[in-house]
Image (cartoon, rainbow, N blue to C red):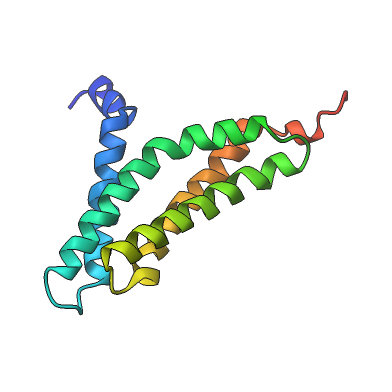
Length: 134
């Protein structure tokens, strides 16, 4: 595989969504493995779809939220809102779908998405909270 092909795959939204689906869906199956089938499989599919969707929209949400805040709040409010929104969506959808181990199921995906939101938000904020005319 050439460097150009690898770079194109790494930048592809479809690849990111598929990776999120497979990685976090697999985690959900593992987290629910002690329950009878098809519960672990359903939990995995639900989490995979949710992770794929959240991956697709998290970047845009953080960018939009970051533009709404200034100063120090720009660094922590956008990822906090993104994290709370993600947690709410994950809990509600998993509860509605009958996922047995909701907290175990969402722990890793929420940690990953919250870390991403925090790091990405910091990278696009670029220290602007300190640039008041200096």
